[in-house]
Image (cartoon, rainbow, N blue to C red):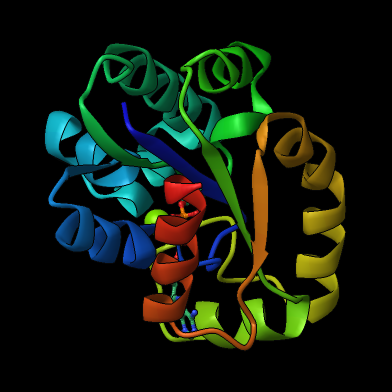
Amino acid sequence: MKLILIGFMGSGKTTVSQLLGQQLNEQVLDLDREIERQSHQTIPQIFAQSGEQGFRQLEHDVLKQSMDFEGILATGGGTPLREDNLQLLRHAGVPVILLAASPEETHRRLQQQNNRPLGNKLDVDGIRQLQHERQPFYDRCADLRIVTDHLTPTEIAQQIVKYLQK
Ligand SMILES: Nc1ncnc2c1ncn2[C@@H]1O[C@H](COP(=O)(O)OP(=O)(O)O)[C@@H](O)[C@H]1O
Ligand SMILES: O=C(O)C1=C[C@@H](OP(=O)(O)O)[C@@H](O)[C@H](O)C1
Ligand SMILES: [Mg+2]
């Protein structure tokens, strides 16, 4: 692994990882896409059929087997919530970058897509609450936190590249 992106749903992990992959000429692994590829189901289908618990088990299995991947890893927003996942992320030995956005901006972004079983039904207050609950887990593994509300994905990728060069 070269770099790990973590953060709440809609913070831009998937988008920024693709840009970083192009700029740094590195492979990108998006945990959700890999889960979908291996299970032959979409994320909403997995939640509908196996519940959140079933999804979390798949997520853990795929994370564990991805740890020796040589490239940029985009996690899902709930990946750091499990202690065993958090330990894997912390001990990967690569920078862990936390992307963040305000509840209002997150709500705007999540409304543009309908593929997040845990995010799509939340209003701004629900997002604020869930972000608050998850914050301690994100803080425990992040080396750098970037607030993305007023940054384009390109600008975020540039900040990360600069950070890596230091
Ligand atoms: N910095 C940004 N500014 C505005 N919109 C963004 C930004 N980053 C991502 N988005 C948009 O927000 C949505 C969620 O982005 P995504 O990369 O899927 O986030 P994540 O993987 O963290 O859930 C997408 O529609 C994406 O185009
Ligand atoms: O925050 C979460 O619990 C989740 C985030 C999603 O990934 P994104 O953060 O890329 O949306 C996806 O893993 C799943 O819907 C659950
Ligand atoms: Mg994503």
